[in-house]
Image (tube, rainbow, N blue to C red; front, side):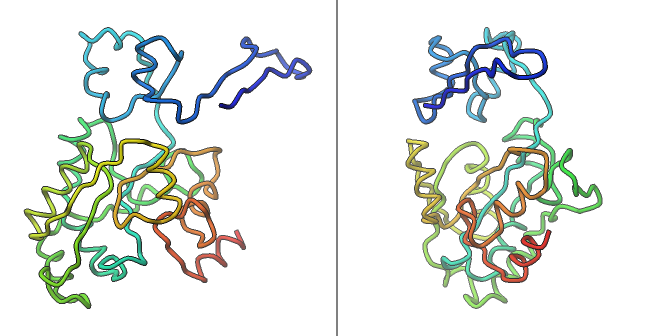
Length: 244
């Protein structure tokens, strides 16, 4: 529980609310909102389609704004088979992201070419997203130290929503890889395990705490960052981030 209280000594106009109570890991946010237990919540992928439906009662309460955030597929680079960059690239190339955006995300997201979303200094519109190229993906698996699909160890994806379901199906269809999905019901447990870098492959995201590229690049890629859940470690990247 986090309580933010109004500063009555603030030199500009006082805030209208005396306080804001943030309930962290207190339950399922949408259910709590619908039951009148909380006043505001974000809408996750699982509820987005119905809330966007004009016939749904919640649609009249929905407020949409552009987000300074992004979602991404993360590989733990210390866990086989994703300790090989060719395998990581192959799994990314085997995903038809345009189809995932259209079908799984209902056209509510845009493809990203980099880790800095529009609105963050340093965002580059000229960066091209990875293409959908199953043939190259299979070639990269063959060129990797594993040599073939048959030599890959068991792969577990630690979540199962619309995007994850589509990805699992595409990896099966385009690579011939069976990926097991293990659902972790409690968000707190998921976050704790992510911090311990226990996940092999997972979908995640990041939303800006403040408008600065440091809040994306250093948080997600510095080797000492607690939010670097993919265990990426590169001394040159660390040095560049520290210099910046």
